[in-house]
Length: 434
Image (cartoon, rainbow, N blue to C red; front, top):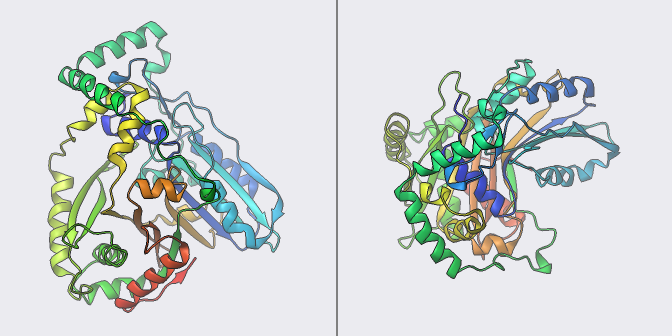
């Protein structure tokens, strides 16, 4: 089993650590009954012996790239006591999403549950994106529900310090030209270094990135896509592009710039992140798309190339891995700012077993990305704002999660809910919003 992280995963792990918060995935299960804590504890144990049973170990020589380790710390199942008022459940969920994670060494994920004073209950699972992408996260849940356990073994866990250091020297030396270019980049970054970037103001305290979950019957969603010559994924992209256009998150020509993650995961693939991505522009200056077929054709061609073709690594990535850790955050802040790109991610149809983490089906499940470093208007504004839309299908429902902040047109959850409702109405759809 490969023990060294790929360069992209390495940059991701270091980057989000440097920015002061983890990029994580959070699943939330809602129940109209108490949770079976004994079965939930078994689920927690199974998660430890599966895809989430690893962490990142920092290389002694950064240029070598960090490595995987199964020697991980794990938090116990967290049970909130006493029951909370039902009206405070959303606050509890948001608090779990901000829980501290440690991709390096662990705990890299947390499982928690709470009861409500009206008899309802909820469960939250938060995991670092570095140890699992969306598909791996869902697979880890389904496997743990089925009690499918396996051990992730890395020979380097048994190596002594000198042997690890020798391996780091060897792998760092293989970078050759990247090391030379990293020295030049390090000098530039050190000269322009600003240790006071992205500091929060007092007004930023208690801020939460505006987030809206929209639930639509799957039959209506797919019918709306088919009647316009598209697929469910194409419709999601069109909706994302329409929101981006409304809030002014466009390029100089007024086009929405979209990026979509693409899974390259094969059968029995235990990689933490198996992703490529595609990008394209959608022009909605003349109004919403009534015909999705052209967009669907463009996306189909790009998706096919992303999955089957060679996926080149951006030239900056191996150079970034070779940088000293103290300068890594400076680089990340420089490249993280983008006021035009929006992301649309589709997890597809979830395994029904994902609803059964305590032995019986939950009333519903919510699932989405949590970027803990986007914790204030100051930070978001400096990075160019944010628009991230994800969707999945479960129990005959389509759930879309919208995360957005793009001043001055989108700065709070009320504005986000309004634009989501307007755009869905353009496709003759209405949703239950949370």
